[in-house]
Image (tube, rainbow, N blue to C red; front, side, top):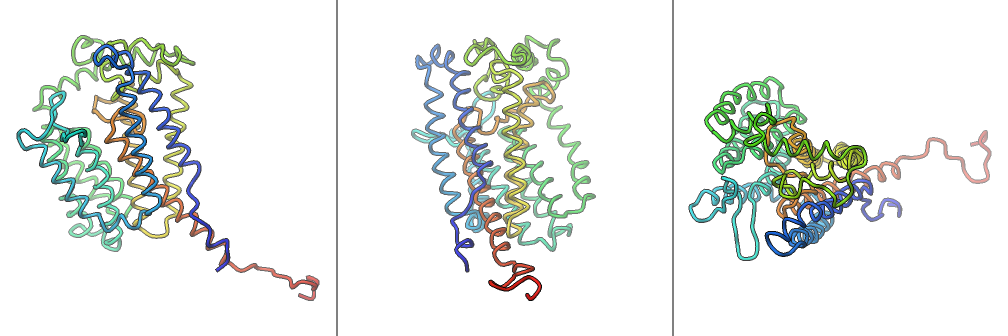
Length: 393
């Protein structure tokens, strides 16, 4: 084998650069969105920045380890990770274990650390789906083998999430299953049929919950419900609208001055629009576009089905959360409580997503390696011996 084929793994520089740029932008915006509130309530303007910076450092380590270990070794942990996710989701339901915030139990607190099982469940679900579909790829079109088992596992995860309640994560899990099964060749009739069957349950879940109905009313007409359920959306729209083309300037946003709730988490996109304007929003979307483009490219170039499905699942997860978060901030969909990937404050989300990015980068490295091996192994079509003319050759 030639020296060219033995080169060290070549990770996608555009994908790596886009992820690091998003993390860096996130640190800046978390501080900008939270400094005044943190100073007022915690007497430390750097409180949220320091915690996010620690999470980013841990995330860099996890990402580096994922790149070094490689995505292939993750396949053997598909079932253990899924079981761990289910156990953690069940623990949230035990009285005295789960920590509640805004009416939902989504964290398990340990000394010095809090774990959000939903973030682990998303990644465990992607890995399990990729492993299962790669193993059953000839039978994915089968209803009993390729569809029902995945739907059953998804039903367990969604049911546990709804008991928290966490409607946004539940929708995300269903979306990931739909995308990955569709890409794997599952019959469209099964997928569409499952969506139609799920609609009555989704309607009941919304209609039977007063706070979800309030969110729907706030979404339909935030200005009519500005002092109630539409308050967040109305303030978010004001924040984005006041940014104009170039923004008010980094740190000069006004809505974060105790007008816009969750300015450093769920609605950090609004602060970006206000302080950095349309140019900042366009740059943010460009970075996400690069991650999605290079993620799909790496997935399609993977050397085996597991890498293809895993890369597609990770890319879909990032794309789904980014699109939903931005759509919520702009009043295009009801509020869901999903973070903006790599940007919003939240250590669990940042660490898990950076680890997922490391796996995606390892897929890109194997894809590039496969291309190099093909180029090295392919013989030249017209090889002329040294010292011989083309005609004699």
